[in-house]
Image (cartoon, rainbow, N blue to C red; front, side, top):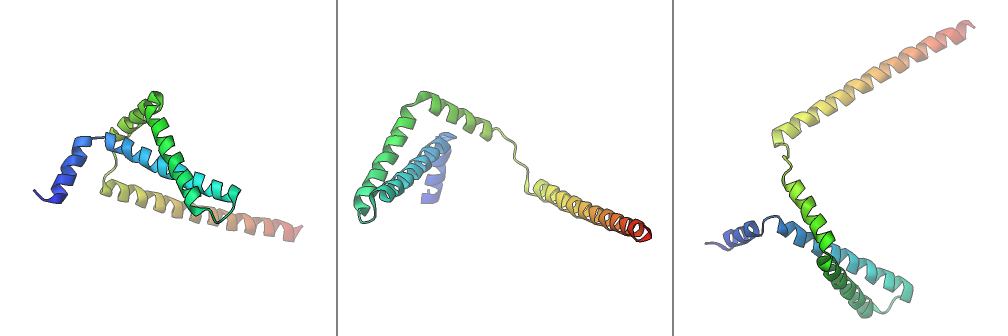
Length: 130
């Protein structure tokens, strides 16, 4: 079994929980980034190690708080389960729908342009005779 197959197998064993873990990781990184930059902004430049450490500690703390919060974890898993149940369109359906939208937009633009030119011509005709 290759390393790629092992990674894929482990990924399939996690199921939808992998998205929860990924969400917590991303949230922790965002919190760490924001805290580090706000501390640097408040404290001034030149304290890179301390601000980075504060950001990492805040990120880990945010992830730990989020993991211990049962309501948040339950809500996140419910959202993930709902999104997993969504039937996403195929490539052909997306292509067809996009083509219809583009054609409708072009047709609408032509109709609006034609009506605008017609009303412009009509108002010019009325104002010139007045």
